[in-house]
Image (spheres, rainbow, N blue to C red):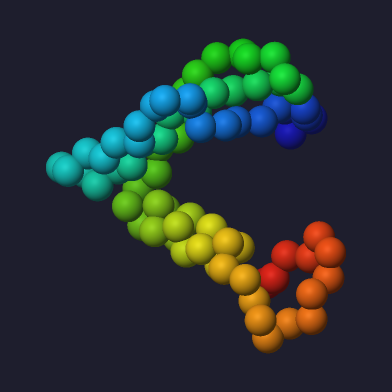
Length: 77
C-alpha cells in the first residue's frame, strides 16, 4: 500500500452514478488525485450487495447518535 500514499478519490464533478439493470452493478465515476493533483478518472464498480453495504455504513456514519456522549472528532461504531 505504500505506493498509494497521498492518493484519494472524489466523485467526479457533474458525473452521475449509473446502474446496470441486467447485473445490478452500480458505477460511480471518480476522479483520482495525488495530494491535490488530478491524475485521472476511474469508475468505482460495486455489486448490488456491495452498494447496499456501503449505503448502510454511510447511513450509520451520517446519522447522529443521541445515545452516546458527544466527543469532538469521534465516530460512532
